[in-house]
Image (cartoon, rainbow, N blue to C red; front, top):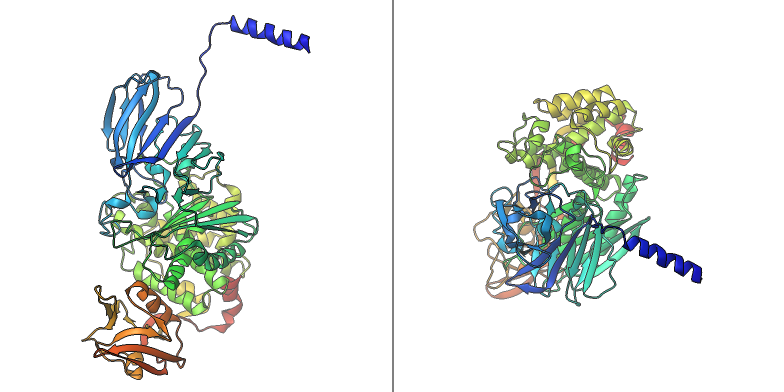
Length: 617
């Protein structure tokens, strides 16, 4: 023992006689202070890795994956300062809205700046028509109550250092819990520690801090965590979980053996639309999580229905682009992005899966699926139906392509549907587009990207020449897709359908209005009443108080409208109304209004086996 100690001492002495060597730091250390909030801003401190150049540039993202918009997150940064190890300030120059250059960079010890949140700036002017950041990609700072940390809004990166590991420390009040797909390596009640291998990985891991309200459940070997922030406490995670669990289990069954993440976080922020709060509703995907923003005033039934559609869409992004993607996605440039040609796949296939899995798993009927696809055809034809989809995708930040972006959710899904039908037909129903995506995920995967101009050839090699011909003619080319030809392959043809209308809506025109002062729901005074109302004796100007004993007003009017979509002809109903100041109950049978609509229906039963393989296989 003594000999070992002596030897170590001698080694230490000889080592100490060698010239001093400067250690190299290969990590970006970031601290976000959520405790000392000042004027609705939080302080961020960044300690750089070793800088060996005389100057260095620091960036806050201009855009982030999944948004397809230039949002300039740097405009929410102020008070940017750089310091050396002694606390002296270094010279800083602002290059543009999102970038700063720092002089004497070899001396750089840390930078600090204040961050404003994006929710407080939203006007609700609408997608593509304002400078609003899409809320699920935005940030919230509500001291002591809620912090939505889409990390790209708080944390930046140094030139040539995006592949450097990041260590993020978040200091927070002890009554707030941070929920993320990342694991907290700090056991403290007031400090969390997260590490990622590179900047892009940190950006892909949002964190929401709020008073603890979360649930967890397992879907096979995947752990799902749902965290909910509801400003008035109207909803809790337990209210959301049963439907979400059923849906995500159905999604996992649909995906089968395709690899998925081991942990997935759903961060649901419910906005108070009557205050200065988030107004852009929807969701944003990440490899292991989804950020969702919805209005808190929405009724539970409608909220659950909306979550089913938007969360299922975002979850399917684990297939593409999060697993199958091009170099432009793999090496995303947050300030000078080069876009991929294949939004038809990233968003289109994802949106198609979000609808196909529902009919596949019995959550909707075949007719409802056909109705959804019919609506997508109608909406897509209101866009530029001759525009090359690959060209639009590549140039999505520029006009006239920018205004066509929303078509990725319409025509993009229809492109995926047609590819699915071709593969089903050529394989006698044995394979479809899910099989193709599974093969592509094995060919590439999360760490291996494809080259944009090679994807069509790869898909053709994995499927059939007819698929390649379709992609080149209708996706890269400018020829509108003849959807009827593809539906016909499955025994489905266009038809005029008599469908049940909504008792409270005729198309986009409502039969009802709401008095904001009393919150009462009133039948419009001058509108022509539909069959539902006349059969029960409802009159213009009547105030609807309750249906089957459940009271309705402004706070849950969405529940009334959405819930009525599940009503059936001939079912008993009792509607409590107020007329001329007096309440009365109108009882009778439901008579739903009828509407004629162009759509699709099954007409060729000889294609039944192929059709069932398509929709149920």
